[in-house]
Figure 1 (cartoon, rainbow over the protein chains, first blue to last red):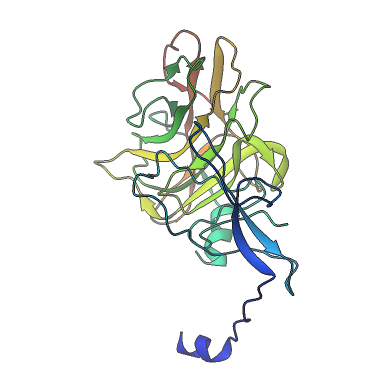
Figure 2 (spheres, each protein chain N blue to C red):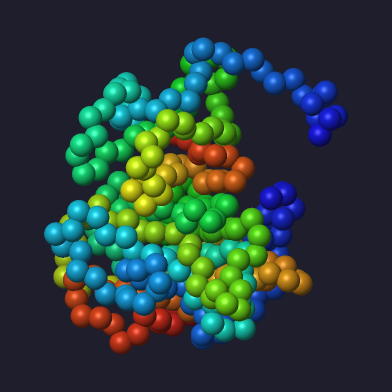
Length: 95
Length: 192
């Protein structure tokens, strides 16, 4: 692992590419009233920087209310992803 | 999971004969007791996909299967597949084709270690969540098989633990009836 740290140079983050949480699949809205019975929040990788393609991603979402559980808030991997949950915390569609 | 591990799991593996006391079932509850449901007016119904390991194989590392018989009104949006939180990998969707294998529905599931034991012979694989999709009367959903890689057996299967590892073991399929009478058994034959 120490060798890995010395050899690998992680790319610096770019503001134009990020993993976002949106109300719709077109990644335009990031505010929602969630009183209705079902609301889908879309996790989308926005690739508008130097990296325009991706094979995977790793992320987590913080700030979830204490009342959210794995029973009432479901994680549904995108149908185009491989669903590698242990290797990638999220498997995302790209835009 | 290493590349070799994944290749071993999906590649050249001896196929074991089926054992009738083990199957992949569809249930309305997490304890695998009921396989009939009325799903008309309910805004959300969870169908639990559970591996029943009551045969020779009491532990497993993964499974491969599809679910046949879905109504034409069901879509990935109104009936999402939710892999169980204990799984590590879920490739595909048991109800709908995906870009991984666009000609057929089907899912390949893997755990990061052996699951199940002599005391816990029900392994949850995931849930089919019905968000109020139009569903006619007497819908019969059945667990069946598909080919992901050659040589996959013509049956739903689980992959065993131990030596040799990742042996594909044919299992039976489950049946659940929606908006109809309960089937005579939650288990059905699923191999060719």
